[in-house]
Image 1 (tube, rainbow, N blue to C red):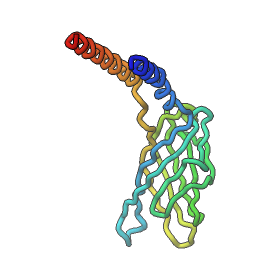
Image 2: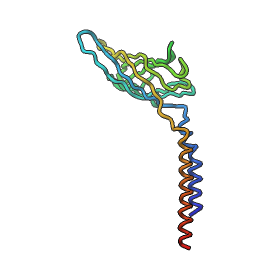
Image 3: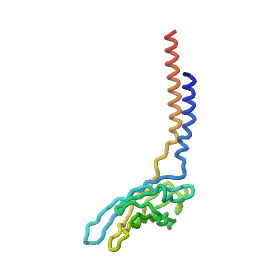
Image 4: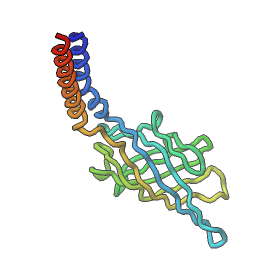
Length: 184
């Protein structure tokens, strides 16, 4: 019994550093949220339509991964295909395509390095447009929003888990010792 308990504790202690390593990937799924403030003319009412999705970026090489994890949805559909991307004067610009060949283009700030996705931690969408692949249909314009990274695992969490395990072991040994003394 004692050998099993010690091997369990050793296994947990060894696996805790791997939990932190799982969050150190260079490919990050950023959450994209925003909305278009659309006004077609004085003849119609202004509308607001949402935009949401995921933008997958390899922050080591600074590349957007279009074929694996990038998927953004707005009123014109789901956009997944690569229409092009690259640096702008203030950040980065991306163009996505959907199955109907409609386009979604938006520009965003790049933090902490201007005009680069290397080490990218998130930014603000500063402009955008979504146009249907049909003549005489208006484009959605005035996009504003954010691109945010997932919340990382706190660095103190593995240490906290190890401490709880040690306290549990001490309490277990104390209870066992008391029960052995009472039985004798």
